[in-house]
Amino acid sequence: MGKNVWDMLLGFFAWCCAILLAGSMILIIGFLILKGYKAISLELIFANTSPLDALLFKQQVFGGLFPAMVGTFFLILLSMGFALPLGLASGIFLAEYAPGSIKKIFSLCFDILAGVPSIVIGLFGFSITILLHHSFNSQIFPCLLISALSLAFLVLPYIIKTTQVALESIPLLIRLTAPSLGATKLENIFLVLLPASISDITSGIVLAIGRCAEDTAVIMLTGVVAVAGIPKSIFSGFEALPFYIYYIASEYSDQSELMKGYGAAIILLLICSGLFGISHWGKNRLTAKTRFNY
Amino acid sequence: MIMGKKQIKIQIKDLGFYYKNQQIFENICIEFENNSITTISGPSGQGKSSFLMALNRLWESIEGAKVKGTIRMDFGKGFENIYHKNYSVTKLRQRVGMVFQVPNPLPMSIYKNIEFPLKLRGEKNKTIIAEKVEQTLIESFLWEEVKDRLFTDAGLLSGGQQQRLCIARALVLEPQVLLLDEPTSSLDEKSVQVIEDLLLKLKKKCTIILVSHHIDQVDRIADNKLVLSDRRLVQH
Image 1: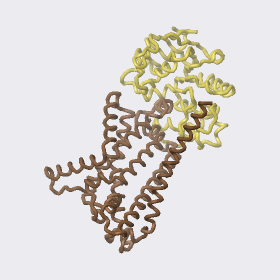
Image 2: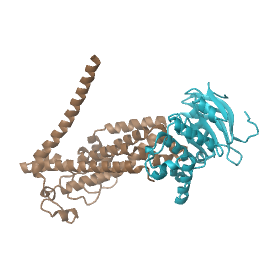
Image 3: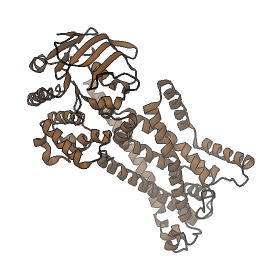
């Protein structure tokens, strides 16, 4: 009987926690939408420019969120472009190739990297930029490339860890199947092990994308600016949504500007949800289709 | 141990198996005849599976495992040391097929499961692949049951069918030695019967080594019965 009561209490507590968390999320999103829905309009994004011209990059948008959206998009694309191959390769190395002692050392390093605050990574990127500027080429300034590289560093541990754990948790029987049929180690990894863990790995990638989209501290020190327009190259400064929100929230001069900040927050949320949606769609397609196509 | 005048397929000398520095068995010296079924039984945890894995070097995929001694097999060109540093492990595993205790079809269609080892070997001709798949499925008594759903998920088959699929997958490369690790332990009586019939038929072209716990099964199909216990492999 006593055990039963504890069981019920624990269940009740678990329920309360779940409801509290879900409730907080709904509260935050609800608050944002309530405050910002009025600001959402084409004008918020494109200001006075024609949307078509802006989308085709024919005309710069001034006063709208479009450059910040493009900046964030490119930032995510670039960072993931760096982090994904590196992270996957490191994860595969740790799970499949690294001998015990090296695995321990590397795992410790990546855990420490995961624990480094983003502002420190931003500072590091900034210091490297200054170093390069002084000793290598005075044309090097904080820019999109450096932000993307720094962000890649920030999200690498997520990708490495999820890849490693996903591969390591594959049951021995599945692991031995392909080798017993004459597959080499590499064939086993690419034809069986990776497809079998693609679903878990995608979860890590989704997390990394979210982090790239929202992080402000890193980009603040390495290249983001309040007004830059669409970045002309990876060596120019850029605008980004999280920085825009931060900037407006701390320095708004009137109510309409604050409204734009809320609008930007909703748009950032939508972009992230969109990216999550795409990742999940890709994950489902891959898990349904991998059925190991090679 | 020499068995009459029959042709010897596998010669094992001083075989020892170690896992994380712990000795599993040692000093095993034995020979296996061509076209015979040898069963290995004995208590759990004595290294019966490890013994099979020594024969196709699959233990090399398991961290902490180590093997000592020599194993020589005759694949038609005289005895070759399968642990020689120049001996291709891929070739070895194409000649020495293995079936595990739990059916382990890969998460793909029935057809692709059988096609998989052929593709690994580099077979690209689709007609040849299709012929081999059909032929192997017929041989494994599975064709009639699956011919109308070759492209459905192999995971949807019953346990017995999955195990026959795994046997078929091992057979498609036409191995000369077939290792089976308690292949019927998770199956119902009828499936067991089908697989035993299959093994008796396969004996004509393969040397079969079967780990089995079931004494009656051993009595039904074995030409040679071995017991692995106290780190030694002895004649029953």
